[in-house]
Image (cartoon, rainbow, N blue to C red; front, side, top):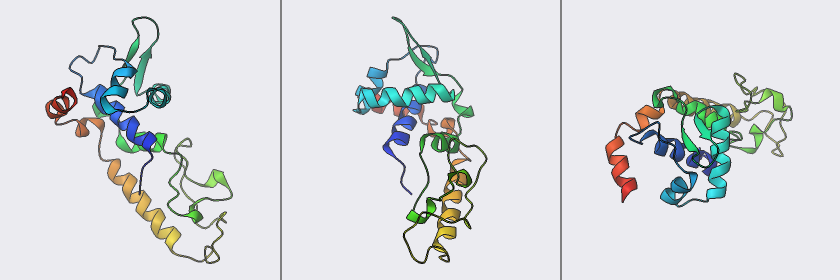
Length: 166
C-alpha cells in the first residue's frame, strides 16, 4: 500500500503543529512549507481540508495563522488517512461500478462490497480471489493505523523539534 503525497503532507503538517511548544501560538503555512520543502500552494489546499475536517484551527487576518484544533491524543491516524486518501484501490478490480458500495473516505462507516460487479477489464475479476485478499490486507492496514494517534507519532517531540530546527 502506498499513500498519496497529499496524505504524507497532511501528516507532516499535523506533526509540525503538534510538536510546537506553545500550542496556542498561530503558525504560518509558509514556515511549514519551507521547513519540509514543499509547495506552499499545495500545502494551503491540505491545510484548508484539515481545517474543514476540524483537525486544524485557521484564523484569518493580519495576525492569523493555524494551530491544532484538537489534542494530538484525539487525532486518530486511520481517520486522517481515510479523510485524505481518495480511495484504497490497490488493484483495478477495486474500482466498483456502484461507487456507493465501495468504501470511500467521505462516506463514514461504509465498506467494500467485494461481490459487486466492478469496472475491471480483467477477465478473471468475477471469480478472482485477489480482490478479497487485497481488501483484507487494506482493512488490516487501517486497523493497525486505528490503534495510533498523533500523540504516539510525536512521543519523541524534542528530537523532532531538533531535526526541524537544523
